[in-house]
Length: 175
Image 1 (tube, rainbow, N blue to C red):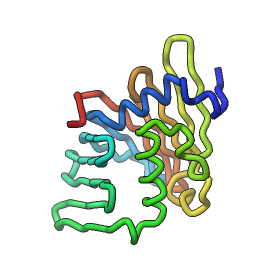
Image 2 (cartoon, rainbow, N blue to C red; image 1 turned 180 degrees about the horizontal axis):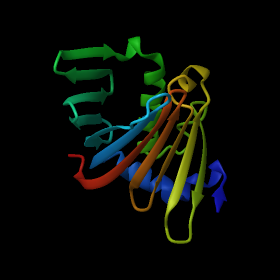
Image 3 (cartoon, helix red, strand yellow; image 1 turned 90 degrees about the vertical axis):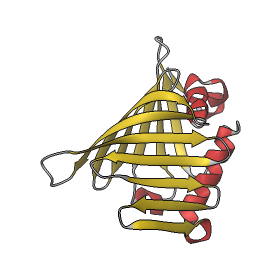
């Protein structure tokens, strides 16, 4: 069953996504880049804490992390740490505000940022599709499909350069 955005408030998908924004998971990713025969594989963890931020850690093949805080993005790898303030990342600022508002219960938080649709299935599963409404964002990602049940288990990110498939496994609270 495909639901209009107005019905998203009671949606299992929305509830699962909001819960995920205050939890932790292990992940594996397979990225297929146009023109490259062999897929790129990586793994790591993601920790989300509502109102504070998201930390995306890569463990394999090389350690690195991206921390998305309320006022900056912090990139860490073997070369050091780079902090980019929100003022230097206008699209990130829009997304960050929308994520925080969505996690706090505002199901209209992504209006003007993403066009959303959700499908729910009789077995309790769901699929949430997001397409950027801002042209500049479409250079990075053209569509995101997230699916799962009680929590997201899979995400497919399509970009002009290829497709990334991410699989999540819950590991506990974000705190």
